[in-house]
Image 1 (tube, protein in one colour):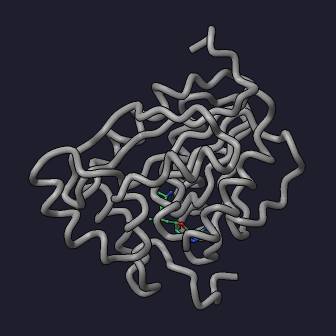
Image 2: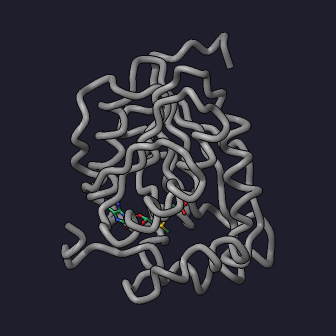
Length: 221
Ligand SMILES: C[S@@+](CC[C@H](N)C(=O)[O-])C[C@H]1O[C@@H](n2cnc3c(N)ncnc32)[C@H](O)[C@@H]1O
């Protein structure tokens, strides 16, 4: 499935995939950022959670460890990265479902998940595929469900601005570094988008977003 010419694997080139975990750990403050997402996302014990573009499964496993009775699904387009995720899940003794497919064509019925998480995936998609993927996320979320995104965002300090001059030319980060994601989320049916946190990393500003539909109760925020 990841034979698509437009497809960008975890570290851009397939031969670099085995290096993905060490690069992310050191360069992206991975534990800090992913644990913050889990802390903020308000997972309940019976939640159904989709980790869209789960890669090597680090977040998927953390979610399951934080709520062992939750039903947690990791989904990615790349068979090689899913093999790594399966091995890590076995090693950690967690029972998660890992499935292969494209983010813009999800094999799940409407209203399937309480939460969808997407960590560092949306900058791998073309603007058009990102719009399709966001609509798919809206479709598979239950009414009142929430979409949580970790990805590049507008630089929030001078150093991040300098780093962004390089990063905006890599992969498909430009829209996100230009701060266009909230508009794209709104167009996909998420009128309520918040920046929950910003993180300075070696690769520049990483933003944690929460996106909700009009069907969420503002009194519960
Ligand atoms: C930078 S990695 C992020 C992995 C993981 N979410 C994390 O935070 O470590 C991006 C992932 O998105 C996946 N991906 C890229 N394009 C995709 C698509 N069209 N459909 C599904 N997954 C995709 C890649 O295979 C890769 O595993």
